[in-house]
Length: 332
Ligand code: KG4
Ligand code: ZN
Image 1 (cartoon, rainbow, N blue to C red):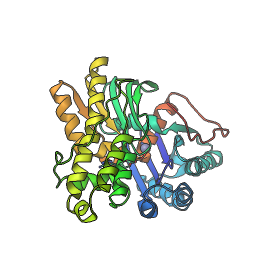
Image 2: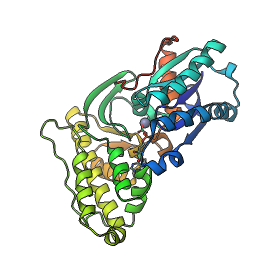
Image 3: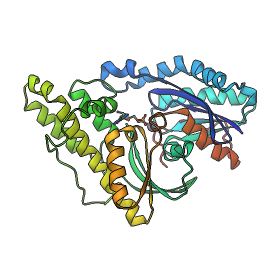
Image 4: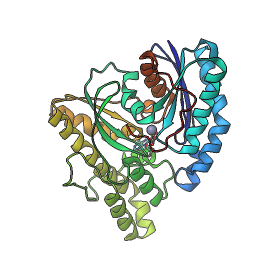
């Protein structure tokens, strides 16, 4: 069964071809970092215009790389939410058009579900597992009991973890997207140099909050002359990263213990963070649990996870009709 996956929910235009839910024949991504970089964040109108320019070459490129023609496909999967509505509509409209013209069935995929299942692209992991989904738009904790069976355990009350990385990088004048830059810079810094506050929420054991640390970094930067910020850049990055990753690891381990689940999966762009990976592995190891991470290219937005999720639903007989609309606020 050959499935094309198309993803345009935010600022990456991506397509992939997946065979039998296992073999990735093609996985092509065009990132818009250069376009949004000067603004320090995604500009929705620019994102949708870029998707319009990129989508045909990306989909064609994926099919070519897979050595497949449109007629060879058994189904098409496309993200229909959540995300930026103008961006979502580009992928969804294209796929509806392809499906209408060719008669090949298509399904709309929930972007969050795709992140939760992305690990299965590379590892056969038995259900259930605890999944921490940390990206630029979301910080969520789920117990994944099977395809279509997701128990929401908690999430952020304010900013997403990736958003905190991006905003702190912007405050420090480091560029966009900030996560990867801070991760790299932190490698030469002292994570204990500055003690930024870690939010501990009383309202729920699996809740996250990142607005406090963002403000704390802002006040810290304001208190220093530019020359000192420059000199202590790596220490600030490492200390900030240490605090954020600590806030992500603790509730995740706690959730796994409380649910009696011995497998933890990381997903979303922030799951590419080297310190988060190391710390989660260390603490899960101490608790006798296993941790699994997707390769960085499957942590950030990609077409392969959309194709995989679509494969599961198509093979269960789901088909969407042409009335399906983009849903910016789609939940799981
Ligand atoms: O999953 P993703 O590609 O898009 C969303 O659905 O949001 O995640 C992008 C986010 C950005 O905030 C980016 O700064 C962050 O993931 N990110 C990282 C790293 N690589 C990407 N954050 C921390 N460390 C990284 N290595
Ligand atoms: Zn994402």
